[in-house]
Length: 229
Image (tube, rainbow, N blue to C red; front, side, top):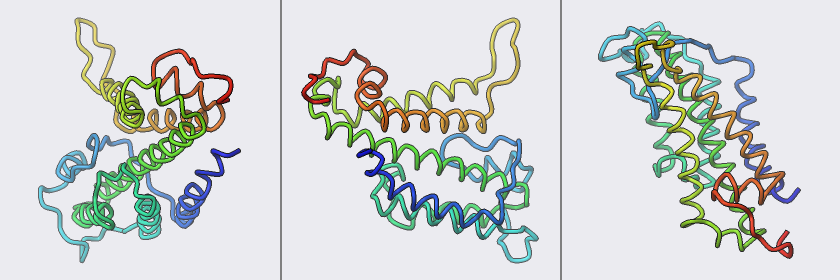
């Protein structure tokens, strides 16, 4: 399939990087880290750490070096593709910020929480990049699709992804009313739901093409000519 061939090299590079860490699995935790891009102080608070974490030397924290290396390689894949989903940071800067935060965690629990959060966050960015690449391939294969977008197609696409995340984040709000049914959805679950959504979107863009773009993303019924199918 043409679309699969377009994104296959990128996905294979990232899968190879992820397999480097298979011998040292990432520890899991149920504690909720900060929303969005990680904030060291908020994750410290949830893990019960001090305001200023010590350096690695003498900290007693076991560093998951193989998984850190895998994440760094995955980030490098996105950098080589000039991905817009790394917040427009210079090459090396994105990983350097993550590593600095990991180096200043004050406990094993805090380190594990932060590493797990960064792994999920990076997976979301990888999937957004792959979906965006497929989206652009669909537009190249069907040029008249862009005319049906309410404004610039790439901006419509990014807004569509942002709206889905915003809808998930609203689930984090405390229930209101006389009979609240429980706490909001934790960030781990919201991240998992976003990852599942992006995986489904990537599959649809690869297999359905026009149907995956027009109705859900552009918000209208397809009117494309059969000559462009």
